[in-house]
Length: 378
Ligand code: SAM
Ligand code: SF4
Ligand code: SF4
Image (tube, rainbow, N blue to C red; front, side):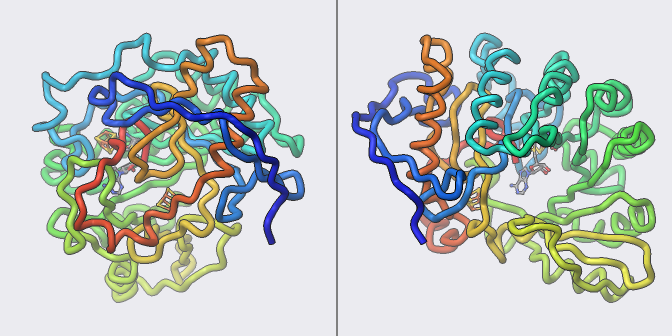
């Protein structure tokens, strides 16, 4: 059933300028549009509520994962954003408060590598003071490559970080170092994971599977985390950004990964924790805990996608595969009131129709502009 739609008049305009620098067409926020609210929730054009906010806090990374920021493209000549182009922590906090008024309950910090942003623990501490519309403390999580985690885990815990997801694509040292392409050891990421768990942060591990890259690591990774309380999730390799030369043949489907594990360690499916959970949950039959599979390609979850992204330079991006973002930074820095910004976000969410993963296979043969992953996080 359609929600209540409040029409609003005015025209949108395209911003000229630094598109190349951010690989993202930045549009001025529309000053026309409607707002759809039902039972107090803001709904998009496919009746999906706005619930989660993913914020990229830096476009820098100390890895050059071949499927994300390949060296050839992100080399010395690549123009990273100037510090003044990033949203300040004050600007971020102001926006998060506005998003909370619009219904956001969870925030995830990502990047680039979020732990490279100086004093990120200070940002987390401030975010943890915020309360959602239902009176609960804001849920704050982070996705990281784990390189700085051993040192920062106690400060992140003290700041109140609830959950952390650490990316780890292989345990084999030679392979891991060739995937991150900077020779960083897997053993150090494991130390970071242990430090976070020891500090009392709930840890998950994400592994992107790519054919010919790391399928041999499926069993070793499963065995490393079975029985530890740390949930490992395998993610299907996606055609994110424009730099990784994605082909469907490179995707190891969740069904395939489940079969590989099942033959060695029997697993059975579990109920989802909540509607729209991205990972399908499985448990080891012998009681060694849980393991997950994120089928972003073979079983798209756009139907339940309640997530909006804030890019590193303050553009609002409606989908991981969007080719454009809407420039909230200019509003923030140009004297817009909280109400004006909230209205702009509400209009954008109301107009949102994105469901790329459901139509990917009809799209991938067509060259298409997409935002690079480090600007909007994975
Ligand atoms: N640097 C941090 C990290 O690696 O965890 C956070 C940012 S990274 C872009 C977020 C997640 O996106 C990582 O787990 C990464 O493995 C995943 N990712 C990057 N490119 C991907 C792709 N093409 N397909 C699937 N996942 C991808
Ligand atoms: Fe960096 Fe994360 Fe991308 Fe790897 S996946 S290059 S760690 S941003
Ligand atoms: Fe959400 Fe876009 Fe991913 Fe679909 S493709 S789940 S709409 S981010």
